[in-house]
Length: 435
Image (cartoon, rainbow, N blue to C red):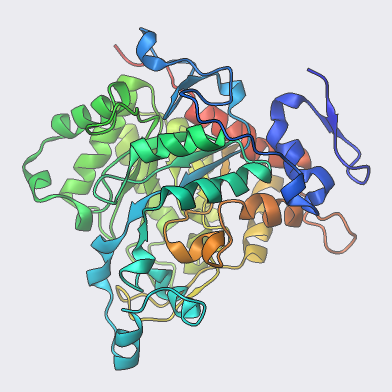
């Protein structure tokens, strides 16, 4: 295919196969709404000619990526954010919020508005019930994903677990409406969200659930999962969570899918005693003990781990073992100032993240990095004053590519292409299943 050029100040050309990156940087997003035209597609197939209806094809998924609308060739994936939620219900977390202040207790029951949005951004935003805790509008999802498409986005990975309001049929509708490829996960999250019957299940039974979601469709839907995750780990990995991790690893080996895991530190304070990135090493131990290569594992939320006092040491250890390290909270810069699960913690700024990414890239770990936002509540959507699913393309990529003397990070377009295109493609492509 013919190459498309970036603006003259960039001075490079990238093949058409990486269409989203070239669109992302075109005019440096000065006119984002004109950078790409959205062609709504209401047919039963996506805009990509690579789609193959999976029910008409027998055999292995190996070498393909499984979207909610069928298999695609990995080269059709394009720019991808790898950890999002298009539909969700976080009410399972609301009983963990404890407000000492009567004012805050009252405020937490208000509907989301401009006047209280600042409050919805504190404490991780897991309050403002019921309005803040639900992403349940198909129209909103189509609108938000369309904005992402117009900025140059090609694909999204929705990792909403069981019992968190996942809606695979609605996700497929979003893909068909917008033309953006969506890969959906299958998972159990942390113990707090497990159904009561989890305690009675064994590893093989949980494994069978994951395999069925990948091969036949998620739950009662015929929409297939294309990744296992996000699996969830609490402050201490308990018996049921380890069961889920081992089941996920076995299901990955049986199907060829990759696994993505939400880690958590033994300490939420800044003493660095058991940072979440170090806990990720123990997660890798469990998955590798089942035979799953680290190269097929994503350890999530690495951008929050640095503030726990670790530097980048443990993230580099994860990468050295072959795992993907995912910076998936871009744009989350709010403070945890409420008494929520005993946290006294602040998320880093995007400037912090950019500095850490620069070090990781300079030290040779660009091929281990993945980017996303982890959007999961209303205040994060553009419609409600948030940064939406397009924040990385609209703001982060230009930040990383600043080339003015004294302000530059040293990240190149080749690095961005590696992180947003090549790494997701490699991670999402199914391996040969074990017999």
